[in-house]
Amino acid sequence: MQTDNERYKKMASLAQIGWWEVDLTAGCYLCSDYLSDLLGLDGDTISTSDFLNLIREDYRKQIAQEFRANSSIHK
Image (cartoon, rainbow, N blue to C red; front, side):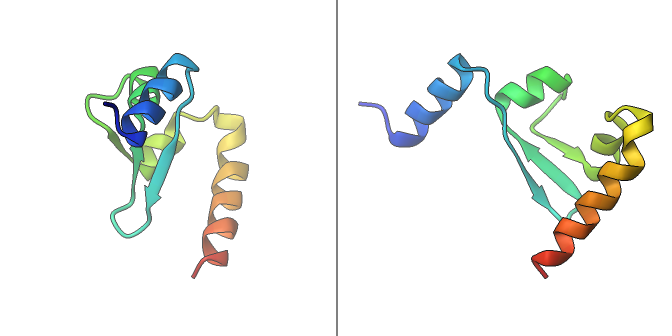
C-alpha cells in the first residue's frame, strides 16, 4: 500500500507540478524531482545565486528584491 507521501509524489509527477523549499541558512533550494528535471539539475538542490541566474536577466533585480522583502517577513 502506498503512503500519502508516495501518492502525492505520483500525483505531482503526473500533473507536472514542481515545488521548492528554500534554506536561507544554507543558501540553497531543495527542489522536487519534477523541478530538478525541468531545470536540468544533477541533484535536488541549487544555490540561491544559481537559481536567480536562471531567471531572465530583465526580471532578476525585481525578483531578488521581492524575495528579500518576503524573506524578512518571516524573521
